[in-house]
Length: 197
View 1 (cartoon, helix red, strand yellow):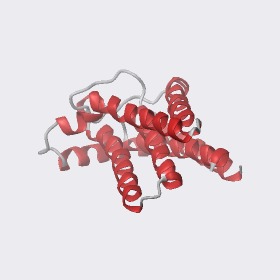
View 2 (view 1 turned 60 degrees about the vertical axis):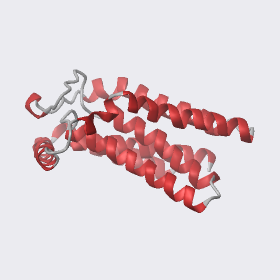
View 3 (view 1 turned 45 degrees about the horizontal axis):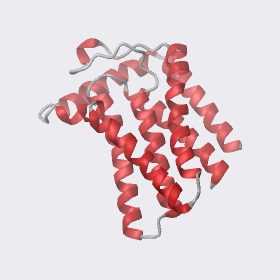
View 4 (view 1 turned 90 degrees about the vertical axis):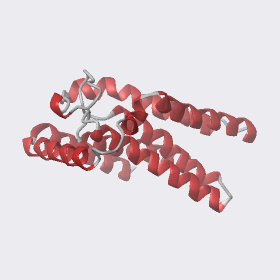
């Protein structure tokens, strides 16, 4: 319980710093410019992948797989947590975004898409971290095949990183929005691990 309380305090301090320190926003903008200049020669479809059907597929596949696993093992836990955790994460956007009220990066930094909601935390990054973080937890707990476990965990981690990077690359989120989403997702997964593992 101490670990969860410590993580929540860290998240709250981090959020207050982001909201009250203009230097962080200035740093954020310079990181977006750097990432965009570094990746400018790559096709724009790459960072747009999490905004198209692939994002839905990457949510649906682990949920369907967890239901299959739950039926096979006669254990509802994986399916239940695979639904509840990202759903709770998604609902957080309706509390955190209006509460923090952080504007998106400037329009001249946004490429291809221009969301109208607030910026902190990145919902794409949060939901991805929760779902694929649970996949990592389940692989670690249940998978007996060493190579399948390594491949699954590596793929899951890379997808989490890619979604966060795509938010910064497109200029629709500040890097600190993504880090905040990862921190909040880590809190959710820590709560899950304390309940079940």
